[in-house]
Length: 303
Ligand SMILES: [Zn+2]
Image (cartoon, rainbow, N blue to C red; front, side, top):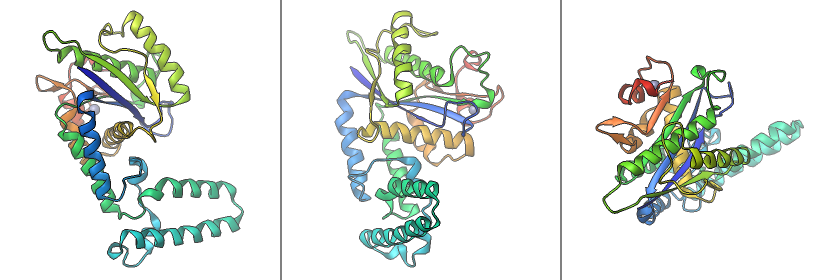
């Protein structure tokens, strides 16, 4: 069997950076089910008028100020909503232009272009869209989620062997490798390929790290199933990466703000063995009581 593991991050690996957590998440799918997954997501997107849109969870989840300013927004058709929002946005761009603040204008245009594909949906509809996608992922019995969630408050760069992003990558590689060895059937060899969201700084670093893993193994295991160095792709073009982005964000929002709605939907896919989560780890304080730490594996895994 061949598995693809789509990898994306949420939060910043820098310390302290602007998020308390850094999450790296991998979604593994056997290639023979890829078509089925792709179709299911396409059906959900079509239902919300998002067939051509990227699933960019961070932008979808925001509240769009203009929508609250439009009377009867909910009763409008998609097209009416879209044109009403665009009208307000044009006026706002014009207003900010007049102030001469180039930085605000640039930020405003960026916000508008990133949220543009979703402006025909109310906040509730957008959240429902994300729930539907998360439910779909949760229902894929053959899929597995792997993640390293680092609470940077408890990450001591002086003691750590690797930087935050490298440690996370090593964890994902190790758990994906373990998974393929655990699900091996007789007379069948599993192979896995990592597909990573492209990022210039990460790609060079992770490629060379992966080459080291191939030669020497990770700290925990030899690499027997993963082939190649990660393929780096553009998340705007590769939809399955967007699903890894959704899962990474769901984990981070749960750990940072206690939001569990999306997390509960994808949780069934956390790689588990004998009823314990082994694929997803929260690197945090010893006595953390979050849902990941309560059920996760052994103390030796802790920071
Ligand atoms: Zn925890």
